[in-house]
Length: 207
Image (cartoon, rainbow, N blue to C red; front, side, top):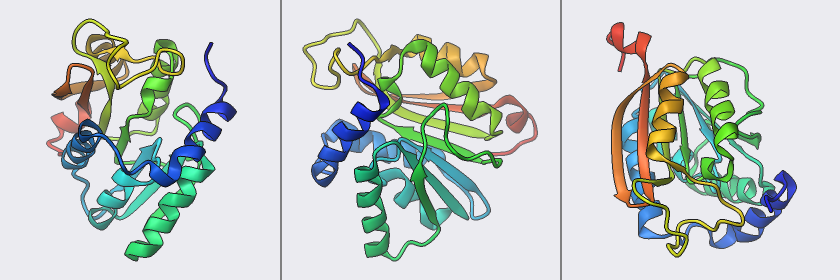
């Protein structure tokens, strides 16, 4: 049985203190998401499912502004604490979800790592549609995703709380929402990074 938003939020708030002790695959995805996001000094970045801020805080020195959204207040509190410790002041942390990010301004780059797989395939499509409506030139997704046949015995997802998609399903969603898939990084049979760019941005020579 799928959990409610409130149950997910409580689950991750309880994990916030130890969340940074992550698997090598998670950390590899973080590095790839940061590398592919590559914001410029005038860019606004929206990081969805920000967790304890791994992606947002890594991108902040390179961007004009980073908007971080998560449904877990415990995760956001830990992210704010890390930002204060590092003297980072251009990140805005707040409550928000993929389909309701609580941010309606245009953004240049959208990132997410290990969060979208909690949604059903239909909800994932709605999430990417919401992201596309904000007009980013690039969307970088690191997540649990199936490159082959799903194996519930692997450590990267739990069927009772997670609902990962195949790479093909995600690629179709990206394309249908106006993103050209420009990179597919395979970290593990069930973990990867997808990079989508808006077709107009590519035609205009934007990177």
